[in-house]
Length: 235
Ligand SMILES: *Cc1c(COP(=O)(O)O)cnc(C)c1O
Image (spheres, rainbow, N blue to C red):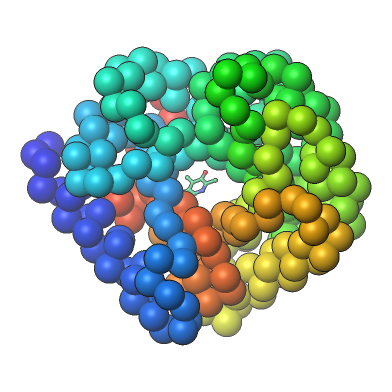
């Protein structure tokens, strides 16, 4: 693949985000793009980087670590871990990522806090919330969020930045907005509850629901397909 496809789709994604922010009556730099590069080769990440993208999201630990090694010359790249996180994988995540979006239980948070090397500064945390109440989906139940947030906010080496959700697939802007609005309301509740916490991030919006997410206040939209094209199976 040549350079043009990633650069073109990245430009289109940026325009789409700018337009969505404008339609929502928000400032043009009020949300940023996280390029979700899972299953995609390091060469494509390098292309997106050359086009100015700095923040990348990965779901699978070993795959991410391999790509980080290949791209270690890109000093100011910012890696976000956005996939399901088992407690036996926390050490590598704490050592090799700047952000984790998928914290949904206290045990994982405590391990990340313990294992974060002090030299790297605090690890940025978003709590994943199961806003669609699907029993199979990851994420803390909304009823259990306050307790988890209290515990995470009290841990050193972590910075509680906000909430993340992957709502159930929905068609149509209004249907898409419902769970995203719930996440925003939960975040507002947390801000009142924990005024000292740096709760500035709503990680929501993917290739299919970016516009709905921006209308509901997303500050970090996670785009995979829209930037890198359709994905094959996870290797
Ligand atoms: C894969 C993934 C995305 C990107 O999804 P697209 O629909 O390809 O934009 C975003 N967030 C998470 C947590 C993902 O796993």
